[in-house]
Image (cartoon, rainbow, N blue to C red; front, side):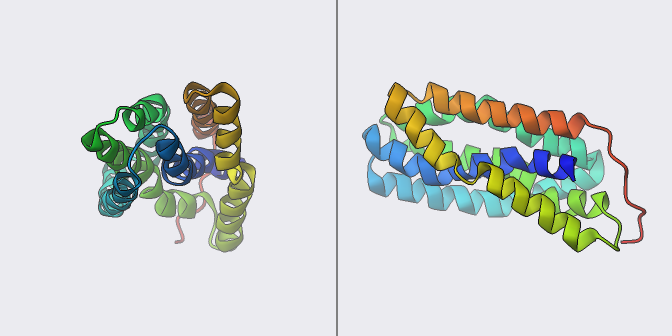
Length: 186
């Protein structure tokens, strides 16, 4: 349960920041609303297309390595994402959303169904999946509000990027914890 909750924190927090907070932040730094909305749309399209790709990669290379790639990519891309929104370039704004969602987020979201199903035996699978999913959502559900408060106080994206990076450290650490595999009676 701890591994499931911890691993999902980066995926949920990153998604909230790269979609919800990014719209307010982008508008605050002068990006065109139309470009931001197109960016979210293209980012979600890329996310949808790349999730099956990362799921297939996890079948080949393992769940944890592919998921860890997503966590580390999210941490590494946190500050560049916001810098790209600040750039004033429509192309960089759109690219930020596509990379943030289509690469970083999709690498985690595409692996989650198989990885989480393998964590729990069939007898408790639904409860285990639901608890890990919902508890992690409760923990980082306020991340857009936290990011807004950080930006309002510091007038910089750096504290927001550091906040997301810290969440990614928690997720990476939880992925390194040993876990008992459920029997493979899927």
